[in-house]
Image (tube, rainbow, N blue to C red; front, top):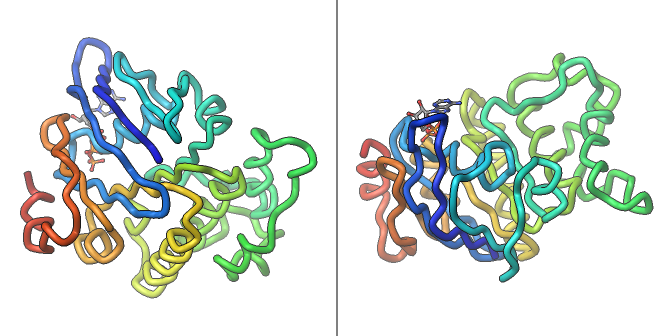
Length: 231
Ligand SMILES: Nc1ncnc2c1ncn2[C@@H]1O[C@H](COP(=O)(O)OP(=O)(O)OP(=O)(O)O)[C@@H](O)[C@H]1O
């Protein structure tokens, strides 16, 4: 379970987040929606230790965690799949996956078969350079690399952006499978209304750097989501 309480964030003098608060339960997909520029990526960056928050508390499984660096976040069990994927283009698929070992004890420095079962296309491409993969394959690699760290919390920033429909389906299937295992809280930022609604168990709406209370799917229609995407 991820709990975010009163998270504030600034870029220089500009305040971007205003006491952002929400929970993302384990074994569920929590979808964060909102218009461009409202602070979704900034929220993920703060949780992932990519940009220091100026206030607030983040708890994982009830324990407050310090998230001043990406390494601290990874050690705390948070994995981040950034917008744009950030695959290392000159490194092979295998080497990209190995970068996830940094926060694991030596005995766990291996790539579990489960990762290739989830994204079979990567199994045959291990010696290809990351930069030679298609956008969809890079997205699968970015998610696989995040999973190597054995996270308790998986953060995904617009994983369907610029991806062809058949790969979007594969990514959706992979996220459903991860949800069904019940081992992690999944927080998905998504602008693709079909994907966002199909995958979400509950929804957090962001508007002007502020969050709404979590809405359960039973109380939130796809039309509501489409309206909230343009807030
Ligand atoms: N590094 C930065 N320095 C200054 N301002 C920034 C920086 N990154 C983002 N911003 C600003 O912070 C605000 C929130 O941006 P953020 O990327 O978090 O929004 P978002 O909801 O994820 O939007 P998008 O869907 O376009 O990614 C925007 O006004 C943006 O211009």
